Length: 332
Image (cartoon, rainbow, N blue to C red; front, side):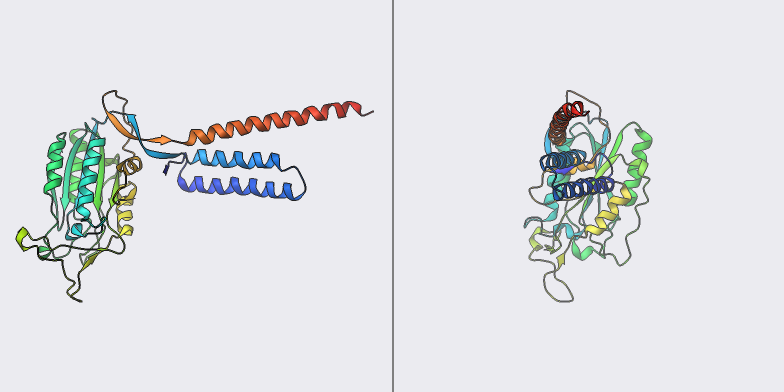
């Protein structure tokens, strides 16, 4: 389940706590003083329904109609050695990256896609194209960097290539929205700190940073260019034991903040719709031809329940007023 509050989450949280706190305190004092409980039960339920509706809960997976042919989608893929770490349900992280790329392409059919990769430096693996078969082929042939060639990698190594491609896209097709999906684990092995991305947020219409891996980490296959030489796992030179790669979600959230997009952790079995809902790729024009990811909205159920409770309160108040009128007439 996901939530999309009608106001920023921090404001929604503050208002929710204030409203529920005030109603709860008033109900407690009323019941303690001996007043009827039923009216305050209704009012408390009403407050809960209104707060729940304001958070806009929903379930990813609904099919909505939308035109996505005005989107340029850029996949920025981490192909450092850690992409081979086997903590994606016992499989390499790169398997999850490939699966998500193909699922996103399927959901955003009609868009243009580009694949940018990085290890020690960034590269354009596939320029913008609507050919999803080319995208799948590109994803299938991606391989992590061979660890013996690696001198330490930076999570921002692909920033320059991404910036150049976004600027070119904005210049050539300013009317097209530009969506960025950064797929990686956030592990910085370079001795130097990661350089800032330095990308103008106006160049990015939406997207997400997708994180792969676990805090406990995973072993990494040697990934020699020659398959016959892949005989074991990379060793930690300081201990001689299998080296472990661990996700750094703090670094991934920092990248998300720089790009102005949300961070979403990915694990085996996670529906890609969740990441797409979080990505919010701009305003899309309605179309009968193309299907777009969506969500089953649940706020209406809470709003409807709140409306019913309001009616019950009106009826109860009306009945109470009707009982008071005869008593007023009896006074001399």
